Length: 519
Image (cartoon, rainbow, N blue to C red; front, side, top):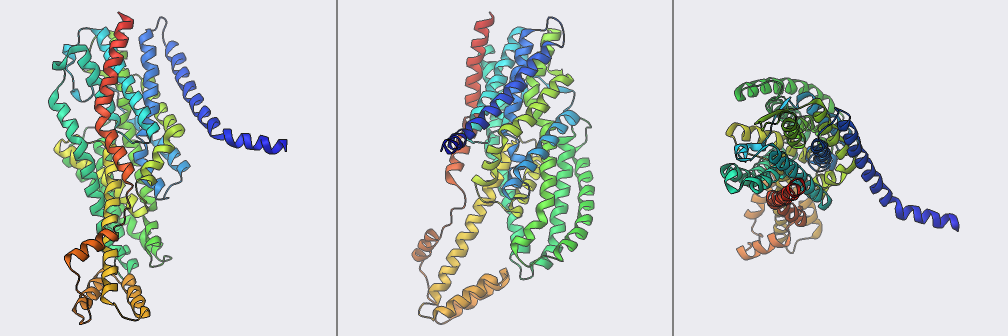
């Protein structure tokens, strides 16, 4: 009896033990940062130690929240296990940060405030510290709520709020701020439209064909080649931009060369893979598993190379100001600062990333490998298009918008199909049920062209029953399939809208608190 009670107690406390382990590991990381930075030089500036702690905390939260967008669809579609995705993302995020993160970073993210209007170096350090802590706190809160938000927008809001608190409204570049606000609409809309367009293309050219295997042999290598082109260009423009400067047109050409090579390789691998496959959608989904694994790795590498600046940029700016006494527009990134960002992002992902990975991968809409492929491809193409036109976009908003895009397209297709089935049954009113079910079975198995032909023939039949507009509307309403979780949509959109204002308000409050303590 005693053993049974002990087992019950252990079961009841398992969740709390896991949470304590996560918290303890994160605290050990922060303590290690304090000890390491404190040992760098004698008489190290206390403000630099505090900023390093906050930078590590920010990196943990970036790993917990932002990285989910890169691997969530692959996990949700079961192309990767959660453990495998975390390992791949952690390795490639850290590699991107350390290899391609660059050695110089802008001290004022996105140029949204004028550093010349900041009174002195001490004030600048307080502004950056407040901005960094505010961004990290908001990311932490968003992660707890299960809302994927933009890390860039969080730190931009922090810099804006602390900057205004220090220098007044005139310090802000409001045209830059308006561009960021515009990106709330641009990013998810572009991501959703592109992802839905590719999913519709796949359905029309492969999934709705009578001979899906033959269609897949022709189309899948082309689709994977397009993915190779997009990711080659994306990696050159974003992942390696701090190592080598490449013009947009050159990046497109190099990406095209990579895409053609991927196309040739895919022709061979797809032909071999389809020899043992059945003519089903579930079997053909498997053709996108390997491309999804590569996509998760490359997205993570590029994210580490770019977004590590959100964690270490303000820290590098504080380090520069403390060491030189100057407020510079750009600051060098010491290797120890970059290491804090890289390790923090990887650790945050491992400890707290699963929650957001599940949100993006499975809690918005159901994903399979085909849909996940469209989401990953949309993320790369949207960034490329936005880069060409100079549009400010958020990788988080793109990925989540793409998930919603494929979900709403599925809703539209399912609803239309249900309405067609209902119309068929209306046309067969009074007929033997066996005849109706046989027709529906043939309709289900038919390709897209045959389905259209069958419906046309049915409407020409003398026994057809004409439906009024009112009846058709009622049918659509009745057979509407809600495949996108509306509560998730509202929660995420609300979090996006308030990210900049909340992080800005937090930063202003923190700035005044820090100034009051230091003056």
